[in-house]
Length: 120
Image 1: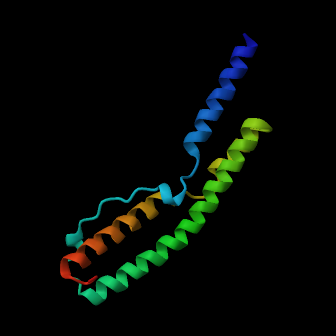
Image 2: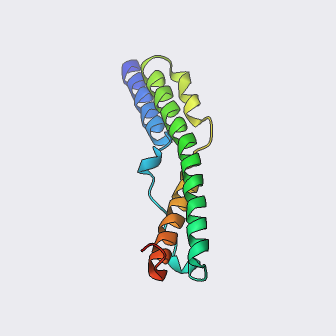
Image 3: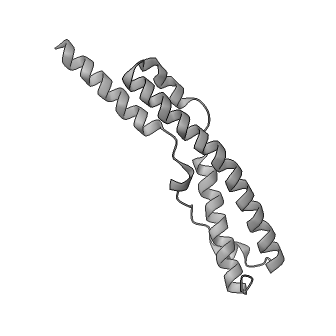
């Protein structure tokens, strides 16, 4: 019976760790933003805003990639060597919501710019 409880505990920890890991930034899906949000922008404003969004996505993606890598390492250590390392997975902030929102804005800016003929 003890063996079963031990295996169940390890399995539960493993499942919770896998769900707690930060996503790699390239796997984060964009949140939908309507292109009409930017319909009043000039081409110059659309390009400037889009460039700003790209810079912010790149900045946050670097931090997210580091968080995802650290989570993967902590998960591996926790599963193989030392289960208290599992608490390291929760350390730091997951930037997925911000990156998803920025990606959505980028797509909306691109669509609005195409509608206005900004990217010919």
